Amino acid sequence: MKVKTIRRIENPSIEEFRQEFLKKNQPVIISGVANHWPAYQKWNPEFFKQNFGHILAPMRTSDNEIEWFFGGEKLKRSAISIAEYFDLVESVSLDKKRPPYLGNIAFNDPLAKPHLDRIRSDIQFPNYFPKYYQLDLRLWISALGQKSTIHNDNYHNFNAQIYGEKAFLLFSPEQYEALYPVKINDELWSSPINPQQPELEKYPQFEEAIALEGILKEAEILFLPMFWWHQFRSITTSINVNMWVELDKIVPMYEKSRYCPKNQKTV
Image (cartoon, rainbow, N blue to C red):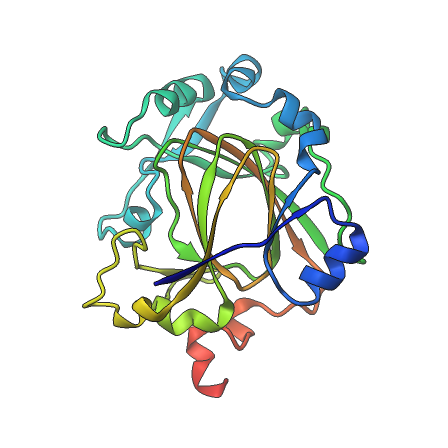
């Protein structure tokens, strides 16, 4: 795998963002925006324990998505309190058993909405898009060492780092062959490759993949265009909120796009 550094930009104007990144389908890290949000001033483990600590939440029993999707044994979910979860997350080390994972919490989920409505106004993404079909906010809370698979989405993504830091790798849509993606379900294609320990004998094309990498620091926002493959790794306890954006109703589903592996012969 070859690695390049992602571009960073300070508080771009709406027009600058649209011309330089949205139109060109290019990722970028944006600073100088989220540092003004109430979330950046308030959200930390103690805030969530004080305000939501008594709430029971369903969590994956493993916070390693490679294990979750490709481990061979179907893992289950368990419910623990938010306070207990943060206690586990804050005590974890890389040589200990991995904690459960509280991520991908939709702000409009019927069970989560009454609680997350209380803090929704703490997030103030700029209106970078001239029009949109749907906005979807998600909350992610992870421990040191938690990581996702390499996967992609059929919508644009803004990921804001509120607390802690995450490392990421990005791969352009055209590189799907080097990632050996597997269909997980109708909404998700994912790579079985662990980029930190790739099995090059099994996945030889991955050696030629070109990644953008970076560290997403507190109050920074990563713009991730749709169909870009990505992996996140928490390098501290992390709290993120992301916004998925579909521009209009004609945005193709991934399986109908030219970037889907099953369509590669027709590209």
